[in-house]
Image (cartoon, rainbow, N blue to C red; front, side, top):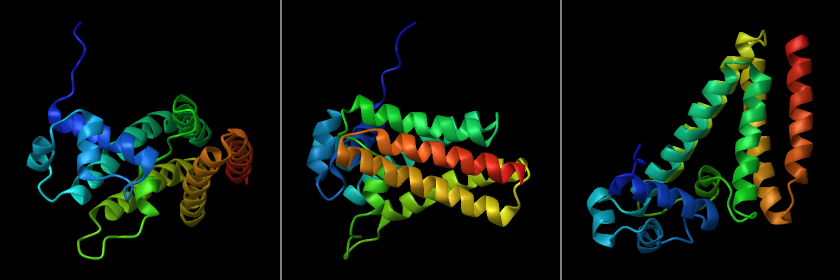
Length: 194
């Protein structure tokens, strides 16, 4: 069976997500994003006429959707399975990149919003974080955790994992992710039993 070759627009988005997770948005120009994806600069502006913010927002949504699909699938087996899959995904990204890549959603979210344009990329990041929180909170609620507590625990999970990925990159060590994984799993197990 022939391998699916991404179309130009999709290839640009995938390349942008990869470069942003390595360098951040401020450290990447539209030209850098196009070059990294192997697409001509003209094609990049054709597909993303509003420029870097539009492309970054699409890259963030793309990355967020990949994680959401995986998380949704794994959460069918329960919150612990979902947590483990969420952590395994980030572990793989950090290891496969030799500690040079993290989460493009976090990379965009922590940057100074553009003063002269709509912070489209940051808004996309907020939407992605909310989607992940909602998936986790829904699973927790389905397993008996009251709605408010489920929402708070979901926020804690996303914040802890995202922050830990950044720590792993800085320390060039996966130990922070392992420590947080153990604590989050204990917390979820205890909360569900209560």
